[in-house]
Each structure stands twice: as C-alpha cells, then as structure tokens.
Amino acid sequence: MTVANIISAIGNNRSIYPLLLRDCGIEVPSKIYVTRKENLKESKVKANDATREKFIDEYATSAVWLGGIPLTERIADKFIKSKKFNPDVNIKLFKEDKFQGLNINIEKFKDLAPDAVEDLLKVQKNKKYYEKLIAGKFAAAVIIPTAIMGFVLPKLNFALTRKIKSNRKLANNNTILPSQIPSMGSFMGGKKDVSFGSGFISAIANLKTVDKMAITDGGLTVGRVTTSRNKDEAYVNAFRMLGSMFLNFVAPIYIAKFLDKSANKLFGVNVDLDPLILDNKDFIQAIKNDKIELPKSDSAKDIFEFLDTKRDSLFVKFAKDCKKVSYLENGVRDPRKYVDVDSVAKFKKEFESFLEQAKKSKSIESFVKKAKYVKCANILANIGISSALLAFVLPLLQYQFNKSVTGSYSDPGLRD
Image 1 (cartoon, rainbow, N blue to C red):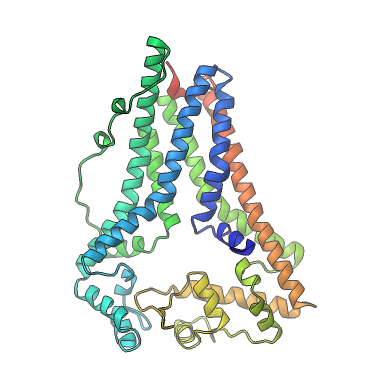
Image 2 (image 1 turned 180 degrees about the vertical axis):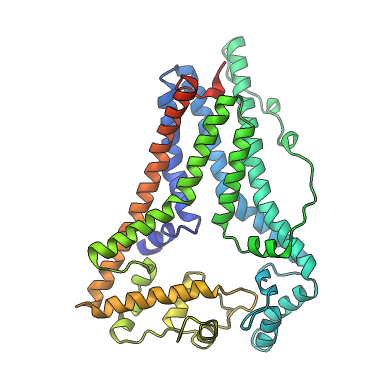
C-alpha cells in the first residue's frame, strides 16, 4: 500500500480508518496516561484501580466498537444467504424512478447480468420478508455491540474492581478467579419484537459503518450513564461520552472543510479530490492531453448514460475507487446496487473545478503535485488536531469537570 493509499484511507471521514488511527493509535494510550496521572493526585492505590479500569474499558470497548458492527453484519449476511437472498440487493431500489429501481434494473440488465437479475427477482417476489431480514441485520449490528459496550463490559469491569478491593481489604490479595466474574448472560435482557416501516428500513440499510458506529456511540453513552456506580460518575461519563461523540463524528468534518477552504485561499489550489486521484499518473497525462471525459450534465439521465457506456473512462475508474458505483466482473454496472446520483454529480463538479484550475496553471504537473501535497498535509493536520482534542484536551477537561463536581481528581466510581 502506497503512502497516498494510506493518507487517502485516513482522510475519509465517512470511513472507519480515521477512527481506528485516532482511537487505538493515539487516543486510548493517552487517556490511560491522563487517567493515571490525575488519580495519582489522590493516591497510588486509586491510580492503580483507575488505570486498570481504563485499560480494560478502552481496549475492550475499542475492539467491540471498531469490529463489532462488521462482524455482526457478516454473520447476518450469511443468515440472509441461507434464506436464498443476496444481501447486496439495495432496498432503495424498491422505490422506482426513471433510471433505476427493481423493475427497471431487471428489464435493463436481464441479458447483461442474468445472475444479478436473478437476485433481484427473488427479492421482488418477497419484498416484505427481505425488508424484515435487512431490518434485523441493522438491529443486530447496532444493538449487540451497544449492549456489550454500554451495559455488559462496564458491569464486568466494576465487578472486577469490587472483588479486588474486597480482597485487598481482607488479605491484600488482588487476584480474582474467572468463576467469580458475573457471566455476560446475566446482563442481557429478553428479546423484543420490533417492526419498522419500509421508508425507515431503506434509510438504515444505506448507512455506512461509521454512521452505525455513531449510533452505537449514542447507545454507549446511555449505557455508560445508566450503569454508573453513583450520580457523580454518571455526570462525568455523560460529559466524557458526549464530548467524544462530537470530536469523533462532527469536528473532523468541519476541520477538513476549514483546512481545504484555507488551502484554496492561501495556495490557490483546489484540494477537493482524493490523494489517490492526484497521485495517478494517467490522470496528469489526461489533463495535459485534454482527454478527461465527464458526464454531459448533472442530470440522472446523463450520469447513468455515462456510467453505462464509458466504463473505461478515468472518471468512472475513480468513481469506482471512491465507492460511488459498483461493477460486476464482466464490466457491467451491478444492478443490485443503488447509485446515489447526487453524490456522483457532486464528484463531477469537483472534477470540473479542479480541471479548470489545473488548465490555467503554468505547469499542470506542478499544480497536481502541489494539490496532492497540500491535500495530504490537510488530512494529516486534521488527524493531528482531532486526535489532540480527543487524546489530551477532552481527558483533561473531563478531570477538571470531575474536580468541580466531586471536589476530587480521582474517578468518582472508585469512591469507597
């Protein structure tokens, strides 16, 4: 994987990669350090307890938060396939328009992609049942990780601390047997039958993994507050979790916009395009030879026509790389996937804006290289700023808030 690939991945605020870097690489170690440092102001014993709790809490939660949704969805997909359906069929296709939909795609691709059309026909005959399967997949992907992170893990962590403190009082022995830890099953509630409307299912089915992580983070906040050991710990947990949600899912988007706009003003360079595109030599050559083809307009008609007839164009290649459109192995657009026309139209405008600036520059190669370096610098700056806010500023603010609420720097849940 090239440097451009890596920076492109961590620069996509709609993907899991920047969260992975910030959470595991920077935020968690820093939080553990700050937790120990602040609790040492009270006592070494409390610092040890707080450090252990924070270590277990952060790394176990990160494992579930980052991996729980993809793992649950893979299991759900296997279940859906066992019912003879292909989970790749997007239920947004249930709503027909002039250019895409179940019926339109079945008719258009019946000879071009017969296997994919067979998947569409199976869903077409069992729409309600398929909707329930997709709703169940979403519910499982969100509810199971949320329950584990927000309710099960804190209770197990607290039980471990209680046992260690109890043993410390009795014999200064901080060993706990696995059999003494409450089972995860004792914290799980009963099943509930939940029904959803088709419009709601269509919306949730197209949420990205990072969107589902934001939802689970909201559930995690509720879980952490409700499982808090006392009122003060609930206040501190609410402060910490709400701050973390904002800095993980909202702040990086606005930081990126600010940095990109600032770069355009300061350096006179458009940095809307992905570093992977800017690092492509064919792209530079195509600009120099004026051979970049784009859809005629932003209309759905022209966009679909271009996607289906200009499959070898650089624009389509980059649209595929950026997950805006999918194609089968035979080169035909996948009729099971929904195309977000607005997203493709926005992508086209970003192309047009960049090409306009590049053609006016003295050297196209220098302009593209400059844009690539500035874009990469912006991405790294965004990661650095958001990570610093999450890893250092928020934990320190949390303990200042803790001090103002409880009069002490130590974690309120460790109060004897």
